[in-house]
Each structure stands twice: as C-alpha cells, then as structure tokens.
Length: 421
Image 1: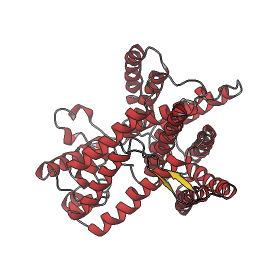
Image 2 (image 1 turned 90 degrees about the vertical axis):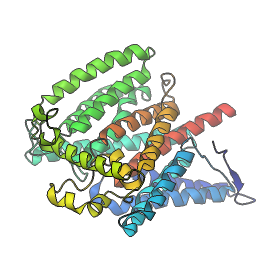
Image 3 (image 1 turned 90 degrees about the horizontal axis):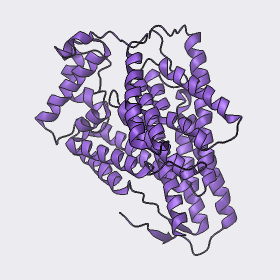
Image 4 (image 1 turned 180 degrees about the vertical axis):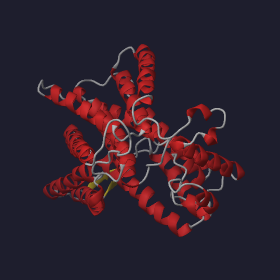
C-alpha cells in the first residue's frame, strides 16, 4: 500500500479563501450527483466535473497543505490505467482508443480522486446522499409519468421506461447504482415521518425498474436487496441462505411476468444455444464470437472503446443485427479491448472495492461512513452483475460509478483518520 504522501504547497494558508473554494467545489460535486443521468444536459456534466476538481484543488492550495489519500484502489487503478494505455499499441484505431482513454479512464480517475478528497466530515456524505435521493426522485417521477404518457403497459415490453436518461438500458443501470443507497436509508434517517416516504420510494423505484423490462436490472436489484439484508444482519450465514432461496423464488416469478420474454425459444438453450433467438440469442452469438477471438490471441487487445469491436470485426457486424456493435458484457468487452490482462485488471478493481467497502459487522445507526461504504459495496456487486449482460461502464453511468465509490472510500479514510486521532 502506498503511504499517504504529504506535500506543503504554500508556506502559509488562507483559511477564509480555502473555505470559499471548498464551498464552490461542493456545489459543483453535489450538482454532478443530480445531473449525471440527465441526457439532455451533457455539457453540465463536464462543467461540474471540472469545477469540482478545480476548486477542490484551489481549496487545498489556499490551505497551504495537501494530504493525498491513496486508498486501497491506488495500485489496482495504476495497473488498470497502464493496461488501457498499453492497448494503444495494438489498437485497431489508435486515435479512437486514445480518445476513449482520455474520456473514460482519465476522466474517471479525476472524478474518483476528487470524490475521495471531498469527504472531510460526515455532513459531506449526508449532503451527497440527499443529492442522490433528489436525483432518484426526479428520475422516478418523470420515468413513471413518461412511460404511461407514451402508452406503456405492464403487460408487454413494446414501450420501455427510459425516464430522463438515454434509454431503458442506461436507466436500469442508473437504478442499480442508486438503489442500495435507498435500501440503506433507514440506517441513517430515524424520523418517524421518513418511513412512509421511504416505503413509497421503494415501491415506486421497483415499479420503474420493472417497466424497463430489463431482466439484467431485475436480477441486479434482487441481488442488491439480498446483499443489503445480509449486510445489516448479525447472523449472516443464515440470512444469506434464506435470502438465496427467496431470491430464486422472486426471479422465477419475474421470469414468468409479462414482458419477461423477448422472443427467446428457451427450449433450445441447451440443445442449440445460438438458435435460442431473441435478446438472449443475440448475446450468445456475440459472446461466442468474442470467445473465439480471445482464444486466438488472448493478450493482444483491439484497443480501448466499445466501437473497437465494430472496427475490428466488420464481417460479424455485417452479418448480425445492428445492436451487436460490441460484446454486450463489460468483462468480455474489456478482455477483447485490452487482452486477458484487461480482464485481470478490472476484476482486481472490483474485488478490491467490494473487500474494502463490505462491512465486517452491521453498520451502526447514523454512522455515515460505514453505511455509505456498505451501500457502495452492494452497488459494486449489482453493477458487475448488471454489466454481465451489457456494457455500461462508460459515459454518465461510468462517471457515477467512480463518483460513488470515491465518496465511499473518502468516508472510509475519514473514519480511519478518526481512529488514529
């Protein structure tokens, strides 16, 4: 583990100026939490990201000192970034992959470490959590209204909820990212009037997730409910066994729900998987092709970026349906793009996050760092499951992932600093 590096930036600080800069940074960062999923205002995402990082840096400059929080993710991120950069040497389109390196990886690092260093008090996590909830309320209200306004029905998936996001896939991924923070809310807010509102939000969010008709979203949210109950239970093994059974029942019921089948012939799944048809058949075709390409040259990547798939395999693209322009699996996509070393890097990042954030004991009531970390651990697990059936580790959903994990690890650093003191 890299020791925290301490460097003096100025011999004397300006506390008043530092406070002003920090307040401005806080406005940008909290605004970013709300606006990230809003498709129509992409420029504001960039403004809030740059503003939060810039003014946080100026705040440390005005204080006259800066203590770098490396976090447990430092070396996994170094490895991941190095693998991404190395892929430029074998990229099918190096210029495109370099653009993706800047837009996805380097931007993610900026967001992550801005969030890590933003947390200096429990109140900062509380404010971040409220902004997450504010964004969720907006997405749920607009999503339900727009779905039924557009003629959507619970009986089939002809119309699928997209809310203010870019579509049902990104909306479902957004819900997977924020659902755990809603589930853990009772651990933070004890007022009696909050409980009915919490119950209403749970029901409304679950309904919105259902009408995305995204089975990967259904699976991920069910898993996150189970993990949340395990995290707050004192007898975790018994809770895990009971919840595993309950989750299987819920998922079975969802499998037979209206809109759960997207043209598949499930009787062919084990006889001839590539003839299953529907969405599942398309995914199996992309995964089978990707598997063969990886086996042919496991350590040679085609270059960072989902569009590298179309550039590297034009014949596959020409003979398959238009939606199969990438592998539709985050782990398979990154293995194709970066080589097997890319798969190792991203698995290491996710494992370190879960191990670092997972609570060793049920988080105490009102313990903001512990509860936020537990919610983030559940989020990471759900995010990985959701992205096994598509790849949304990009753009706004990728940015929100780095922002939430950065805040969680910033809270862990805050709690660790208190123990040292």
